[in-house]
Amino acid sequence: MDHEKLLALLDARMRRGAGAETPAARIEQGAGVVRQSGPESVWNGVLWSDLDAGTADGVIAEQVRHYTELGQDFEWTLYAHDRPADLADRLVAAGFTPDEPETLMVAEVADLVRRTDGTGAPGIELREVTDEAGVAQVVAVHEQAFGRDGTRLGRRILAQLAESPDTFKVHLAVAHEDGREIPVSAARLELYPGTGFVGLWGGGTLAGWRGRGIYRALVAHRARIAAELGYKYLRVDASDQSRPILERLGFAALTTMTPYHYDLFRADR
Image (cartoon, rainbow, N blue to C red; front, side, top):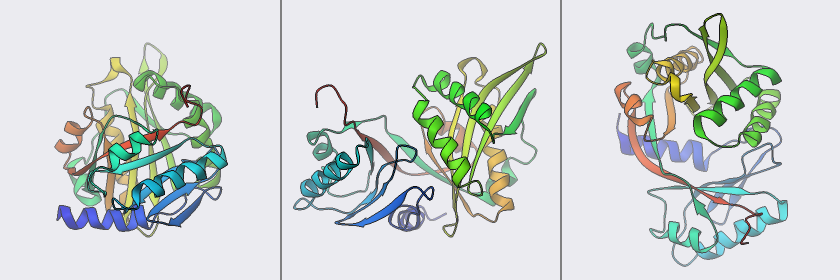
């Protein structure tokens, strides 16, 4: 893969040319940004920006006004190659809080399917989640794996399953032990029609079940679905924990990205 060309393709198709994640969301373009807006059940935030030192502060202020009027917290996803070079400092000065950086990684679907042919995890069953009970299990796994409240995530998953069932899939890894069923990992697959890309999200595994090939099995399972549907590339925003696993599977690191959060209800605001 030509990494520079692939990053440019991803920018064009998944950031500048992004589609709304559900019918309830809307994509808005203008003033050097592309953003998604909607109710709390969708992700609200800036997907792409191309600013300079003279325009950045004004555009940042406009996004804050826009989402404040909507009454929505939002995220500005900042990629390492976004301009201007000091955009991160400007976001912090405007009241944003950075999350942990992630690595944008991409693999070719066909290559990954070849590498993972027959991959599974002993004693683990992979199930597709389609109802509220399954989503509740996914949220519980997320909260235990990442140590974060999953209430909003649960609402988003339910909305996407209801409104975009053809392009959004959720999978739960269930262990069978001593006659019990134990949800131990969960992951999501999002299809982006017309782009050639699918997104692999989540993949959180309970601490006591890591190192058993479960994350790898979930990646392989979703890659096979993407291949059956004719997609070319898999995209992951990888943590430091998952990056080594993905590299062994053939994923290439294209750049880094950092989510910057604007919380309307932060105590000091």
